[in-house]
Image: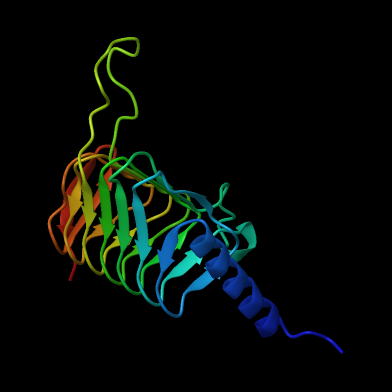
Length: 189
């Protein structure tokens, strides 16, 4: 007797959600998780994922054939990654030292990198701590493939970020931004 594709996908989804919970992630109801994300939850930090999220961490789940697994990483005590309901992320890295929030129904394309820290002080051999500043991504945002969203950025509701953009400053609601560094090009109509 052949096992249907739907049964295999449901088992994969259940296994991945269970595995994430075992690694300290709070996962809401009705997730759709393909593949096993790279998870690191620092002591005293949190990763909370809303209901009906889609998290893809496999090459075969995306026609762009992303080069990495989805990674959700908190770096220190008190850090928090919070995802709203209906969020979709493919094989991207979210690395958090303080706070990264992602609003409801936001879609993040493959191979993106979202960080709220510089990871090290400058100069490299100095005693300065790395600079950190929270990242906030609103509801109904679309972030195209291979974007980089840096510390302190706030992306407003309904914004669209073009593929390959480096977002170094905040983007207002319902705006289209693209480039390196990303600049507002117009509004969503």
